[in-house]
Image 1 (cartoon, rainbow, N blue to C red):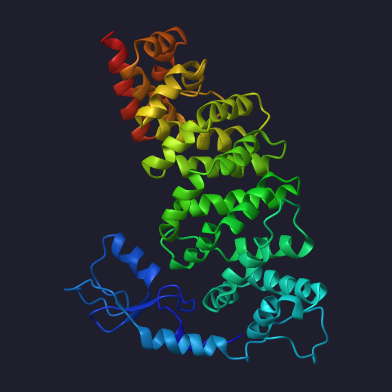
Image 2: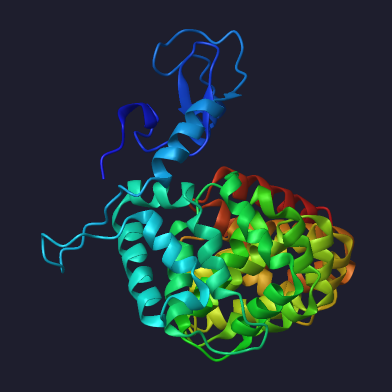
Length: 397
């Protein structure tokens, strides 16, 4: 698949997904040039001319040309398993097959999905082309179409894998907007049913990753609030924090952390539906070696820090039995890199400032010793700054 030179971003060398033009006349892909400008650069990357005006003007003509080129039936999909002389289906043909409803057999759709997954996994160009052609909403529709709880069929499982592979990594990508299909009652019911149903670990972890994306993407803010307000989402998600498969528990705690780090209504809903005891249970599980301690604990501590920043979350952490002592234990751990220390310290600082009982519990759990050990370690600047504030609080007692 050969991409015309003019259709490639001069920074990433990938096909444009959202072409924008600078005042110098040069066109770039929006995510690439935004990263360039966010890094403090004030010149055009190609010409190195100073930018008197950093405005980004959408290049609609180029985008239209790219869309026409992508929609043509000449993009052939290589397949090493087939005869070299056999004609391979184009991207447009594959998309039509997936959209055909009852017009195509289940085996034909499965074969098309396998080709899509192979191309998306092996080629950045293929992934970009399929995003531009609108494969992502088609794949999501194949997954979330039945409102009744059930396990994923082979076709739905493949469609979910394809969708996850195509998901853009940047939270600012407008492509995430197609996830808003889950706002409908039928689609959300389907999502919750799949999350709660017995099924393969890879599918459950994929659904949690999808929820994490919804919670962090700019294009899905309203959907994120709707998901956070849904009791069904929480009742399906929180039990996965203690799932026997690390892939599932890890993805679940990252999803919970993403929701908790969102807007205030989402944090209030998380507290209301029992996120605090569930996260503390996850910490206990990680400490006992029943989950991957570093990754799971880090995400759980980040979520608890975010919850402690709200009034309802602060009260929930302060009155949860064993919460303060659990946080103290994670201020400094000899066997870890202490990546979650700054979150544990920040949560303790918030709780101990407001609660005399929490200060007493923390002192009894040896918080001063833990903080001093952390300050002597190779932890980051933010962790040390917060640790000094916590130490100062206890010195004033």
